[in-house]
Image 1 (cartoon, rainbow, N blue to C red):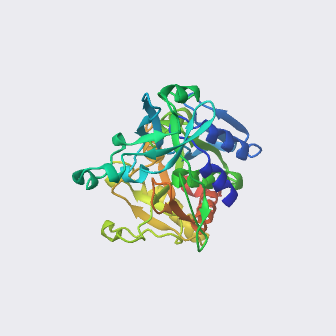
Image 2: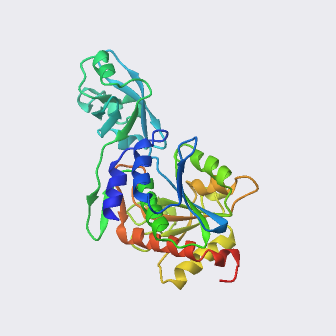
Image 3: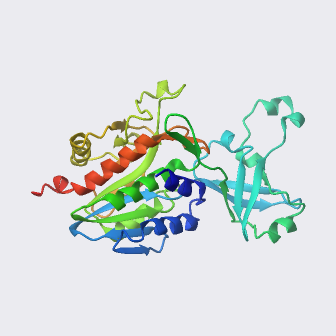
Length: 348
């Protein structure tokens, strides 16, 4: 599992540019699916055939990143964010741009040594930053295959921490992808299971909308990451989500503007965890939502739940997760798929 997480996290796949991830995921699940296809939007759909009931297991493969907006005559690159960034995290990061080949650069701005006093007191906005790839001119940059529209991703690799914890970039949602892959491999469900690695979740749940419409499943589970609230300063959030205490089952997200999970889905997931001795946590969140919201509102409505791995410092290059939570999440989803008849109230 750790090697899979490293492979997925260290790769780059900004929203709308997920090709590298799609190829990695396909290589992981070939041999475990009866059918694999890519839809028109770029979602990867792997299917294990079962009975007439169908379940959609999703995890978004895109990560937040940037796109080239302008190249000045000196070869400095202005860029725009794709997805939700806290601007103070972006400055001084090393990035990779996808030109003719991978090109490395650094995010810079005017240094404090030449700032006015009032400038030093303000947060630097992304609009005031630029990328330096070492070019001497605009022509240098263009010759690298970099132009307006080139995707830009953070360059950071997974590293171990203490107590079976790891840190890296894009754990939102490469951790979810890893969990979904392993759950799909392990599951022995009576239902037909569609694993969908979705695109463009970070910019509007787009991949989930299209794939859910096409598949029209009876039931869905979205696998994602959620905010852990066990670090200094998080007390005022009034949520009790911690690393190492199990995967998180969502009850409500985005204050109900996103998903309000049905009691039937909640009962199925909680009973599965309890019967199999899998620790879990419950989440009522005021901000953020997942693919499950788009799926839930497809056609006449599709019941959907969310199982997340708690993570610290989400939407940063140094997200932190506990591998115990990852393994428990795999067990919970695999068992839920295996026991999906209990949701449909069919005698086993």
